[in-house]
Length: 469
Image (cartoon, rainbow, N blue to C red; front, side, top):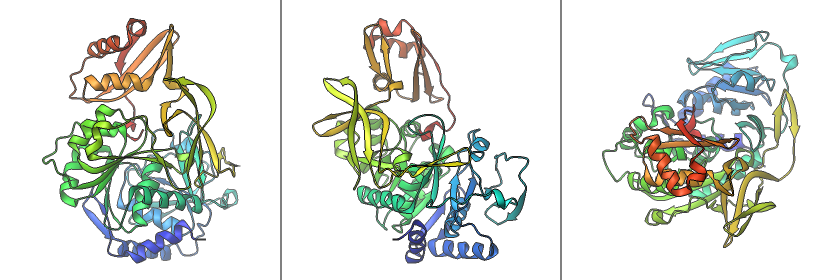
């Protein structure tokens, strides 16, 4: 049985002329050169045993340095964990015993004062290797660690094995028809499982070219990167779609074969505006959660069919993946609703919690996503936290989002919550947007009536790294 490590090394040696390009600094490495750099790093770390030990990557921006060190750790048999620097870094690392931390120049990670490290510098970053090897755990049958908010609760660290990862990658390659002739533009952080598995590894194993974009400021650079490197595709999320809509492009034909949108709910009005501004042969709206590997289903929309986009439709399950309803919770438009059950060979193998392992060997999981089936198609409504009651009525958060985006542009994201009988609507707007909160209140009153809006307060909403959701 092959492994992720073996497949990566095979791709680097087979597709030697393919390239990974760092669009931040206009630096390119061929696969052959990356393979050489990894081997040189391996010689400099000779005698150090990374096998089945966790290596935490503290990089707050995508870069070719991160890619080379990530692939090096995988070749050494280590278990990489790329963390999101959002103030939770030390909390995350306290949940497991790690062998080393890899830091970049702008590293922000705080570590426990009682841990002593040996520092090993490379031209790509610094390894802080713990001196207390007696307390270092070896995590068997684990290839990769991914973080997620999970289907319930707070941030979690999850274990994945090679067979599940490779199954998800291969099914994703088939669903998106990724080939060696593709060039993908990475607009999302590589720590995001959808970006790492669905985009980076899926293109790497096919020998496709990969362009690394500065995801924090991608709206300012995407036009230049598309003109300069001629990608055939890029991956994005609903909030980033709304950010990109505010960007000015110099030409209409971008030469894109496809664009993939993952993450949360994408309303049809933003999608239709996006398809006009960023034309592609086909759009893939993908559904998935990290616990499932992460890719689950693909909704394919041809450019000519953009007007008929169904925002709640989950799409066709990937190969060997199943979706079904369980535990009926209500009804919507005369259809029974229930929690979504996913079966997949890519289901995670357990959580790492408070420096101890929790294992699960199931091939299925039940999410908190509430769905219904219509004409043999599965549609998502949201979660219980997205459903709101007021007097004798109720509404879903996506209905509020649709109402706002139908009438106004420049809305990046909304957040609706209820406190007693009062509703609070947070609105994240583009800085240039002139949409007023009174205008939004009026539109919602026309759609849902005064029973909803009489207790509604609208204000600003800010969220760090919001584009990844």
